[in-house]
Image (cartoon, rainbow over all chains, first blue to last red; front, side):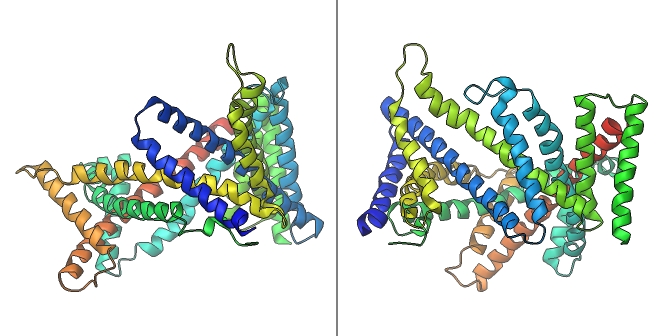
Length: 218
Length: 237
């Protein structure tokens, strides 16, 4: 049982990991086809993982309704909204689910008027909270905090017309800040992150990193 | 009690405004007009959180969650599960044979769903092993190529007596400083301490620039929503 539940998954991870590495360096047509096929497999497995997430979300709200926890009515609203949207997703403007997706109908209406408006509103709300965070951040208590403050103020003024009206310095300084010191810091971070990602990938392929297997039965 | 009155007042005001807009022909009495009313209502309900957490906000938040979950299902079903899987078998195209190799990812995907079973949950490890293993394999060469070699090359260019050369020098100093700052195998004292201090300054400039950039992006979205409310909904602009 240990072989099936622990060793075999590690063998699968090793085999597909090596396939991923080798496929990149083999320019042969068959290797490229195999890599495209693997990308397709990945998309399909990823699509199933969405169903896993969906079950998790609906189950969470269903349990809240069943146990009548505080605010259970909101969970009911979430499930009803999901059901209404699902009806239109499956209806597909009269074409049904076994064809290409229609670009019109109730699905599009709900997407345009609820999904898009809510998503952009949610993100724009952050403008208010980021303003209060800025107040706390921008109290220049140390030289480093002062540098952060100055860089942020220059970039903000450089991105709006009033900054250009005040002085040509702001748009020029903004471009320089973004393209030189910001680039240097981002590049340093990226190099560190990449080395970390490669090391982690090697650990996964060689079975040293096993946390993705989860707990439970051996 | 005060909040209840405010809540009812806002709802009545919203209803009255919309009735007025439809009655005087500002908003069309069709699906387009209704869509604008719904979008305006959701926008205002979500903004009500700025006052404090309230039932209107929670209602809009949960509607958003439900609709978004079903929307992502549509985005998963039509292009991938139907388009790249089921259609491959049911409608493989003129002169093409069904791709039965796709049974393998289908089985792996179905095994992933055993995650919720106490008895068979271990079977999902095969799907995760495939996914994580292949992703790890793809990461190694691509990160080396795109994020290491492609980043080192422009950093190590010949320096010249020009503004570009000066910028190159600043980038080189910054990259080295940041790398030293994140290199924890050496104690940050003496020369390493001074270099890592330079790295901190570069990081602070970068964080400040990113912060300013993010604020402007959020404010741009806020302007978009306010424009929608004042122009598309109320037609005041």
